[in-house]
Length: 121
Length: 107
Image (spheres, rainbow over the protein chains, first blue to last red):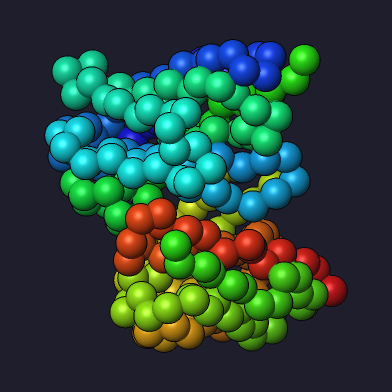
């Protein structure tokens, strides 16, 4: 059974940093691209970032480019999102999601339950 | 970036109804279009990929069609568990953008 478990969310002040983690199990992690997708309270889905199977290709939404960094550790079956210079508009539930293939721009077929990030002073 | 626009934004229907949701891309995306269902408090679930391919385990009352810029998701006979919010997403280019969502409510 595929499982994706996010952690690392919490309350953080504007301008500070936070690192999200996603622990994956139930599939061959290094065969697939991985993604972060967020959802602000009461709003729709926003793709944040994606990474290919071997970290050779990454992508970011314009809204986070230069502030967020996606990475993965295939030996640990883990995905990460380093979030710097956080803003109030980054407040959202952050989902970890598995791609259907090894490249970045593909559908996502499994999602975690999300970790909540709240940016507020 | 490619913009995805869904219509309607909300829809009221009854159990047994046939429902269609439309998604339009700001430029051609071939058949790189996916549909997701999200229920309150839950993570999204992939229903349809590549415009018309049914994800494993998804009931056959769900179907997708279209190519280029115009796409539809059809539910042939609404069931109580289908009342949810539906999102389209293009996977043609980065960023793989989502539509704004269509909330399907019980009439």
